[in-house]
Image (cartoon, rainbow, N blue to C red; front, side, top):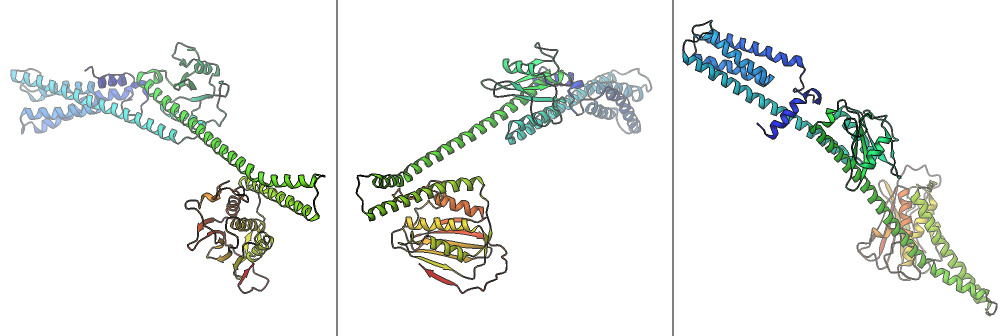
Length: 538
């Protein structure tokens, strides 16, 4: 029948000698001859069974035994051996069981009709069984092809780089087409280059780059079995995208029919399409990542410029104004005014220095170039050092310190932890009304030391608890004494470097509280006697 299934079956049958499909339709010639031997043996067995039942059953029932043998041969060995089994069955039935027995003579026309029907039924059964067997083989081939394509698609979907795509393509093509191959990609100048990575099994090591370049430039297949450069070893396929060729696949087939047979050529086209889509996906992902990085970098640059332009402009204006007055010989200044202007210049220069140091500290922390100089330290000593150093800047905000003396020592970089506390205290003083108190406390938990700084200010706007730690983010509008928005970011970087966490929240009775934790470690034995818990207010 001229159906698509029959055409595919005929194509599969004609190519069974070189398809290499590792299933039962790729039989050697010796096994095909064995089918005819089975036809003879099956007929002999059916004859012996019929001989045992000859005296008990009608002849029509014996015919069924022979038909069973025909079905067995048809399902195992195909149409040819089953047709032979049908002819042998008719002959054996006539010779051994139809009167006159042991003769091929037919005295009754009824037996002639029986022989014809038996032969016709046997041939029909053998044809149907053979077709069923062939369709099962085609279905098996289709299932295997679908599983190969599924495995290829699944592995390519997990690839993140072009060299991974090339490796997967070479491996799968070597398994399916049983020939070495290589995926050749162009460089930035459009020149086809050989892969620079490690060689893998199934790779084509001697591809002709000149032929590959021609295929890349013209977008046409070349090499063995084609009209272009047929003397070249291997076949070169263009991997063409929507706009241009993006790569070249070179393959040395075991047999050219393995590539140019229509069914195999469609399979190769599917392989190439999957490789093309994987390469385009990898490139689009890389471009998207680069675009995101560029946008993020641009956003950081704009935020940095905006923050610096504001926070550096204010102290610079004060420095320029004060220094111009001091440097102007026509300006008459009293000693007190001159000292005040000098103090203004010094304080604003210090402020600019702190801003610059914050930027440098954050850059070093994020780059991982800051080494922690850990040592066993007392939380009381760290807190006392910070409060003493900030006494003038915290003069408008009483600081209540609650640090139990029984706290264990912590293995930290004391200078960096002091910087965290300093930033948190300055942040509290900057955004709370003058005269409100600030609380600084610490406590020991099961496996960590918790430290907090709490104020009595307006609290945190809802939804900003995490954003406060972003670079250049400020919860309130810019003000004259605002910072560059890096203090809390630096605090998180330092705490993270110590293996702790830092959070911000609004207190139930008003104000904001910042807590950070430090992992508790096995501390060395104390030498000095422990003091009683203290509560100090400054």
